[in-house]
Length: 253
Picture 1 (tube, rainbow, N blue to C red):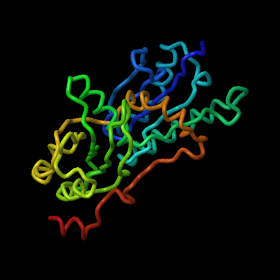
Picture 2 (picture 1 turned 120 degrees about the vertical axis):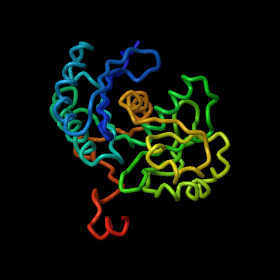
Picture 3 (picture 1 turned 180 degrees about the horizontal axis):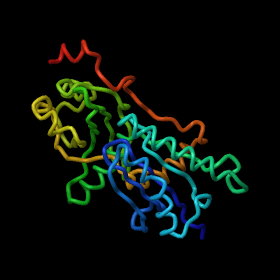
């Protein structure tokens, strides 16, 4: 019987750092860490990776791939996860991995959708037909993406994009999700934009992208050939700037 695969998952796209090490198979052991993101993530990441590997009695070059949340999300967080994934992958070049470990860049909204799906199922809810992932992009905008729930994993219907909170209901209408029937809205934007999101149809659930979700997604992504070399593992920013100009701030005041 072939040995179970083993993946390292890194998620730093929000204010939380999470790591997970395991096969990604339901019911099998997962070694994990969760802590503060931001600047603290860059200090904790490598020591915690080493700790997880030791805990699991694994070597880095014995892994099958490294998965990381590629974005959208915090620019600093995305760069941190990408740089660490690339560095670890390059560092394993040898007989087993001549080009270094394969890397799986995973959309953070897909990871958010997967975590929301799993949490919702764990709470006993009937599976929704569609799941809309919403991540607070700051600057009065959301990162959004829509997924169909096909079996165990979310399947992308609309790719990640920026959306003003007040425009979400119209965007859902354009995706054929206007009535909210069996649609789950999941993310971290509901409190910050409560008034603007009031008319958006669908059941709601707080959720964030996690390394555990990346880990569960990794086997299927690996089987579909989504892995790339370290040099091709790049962040997905969606937004091309991180701050408003003075004129934009004054106009919004």
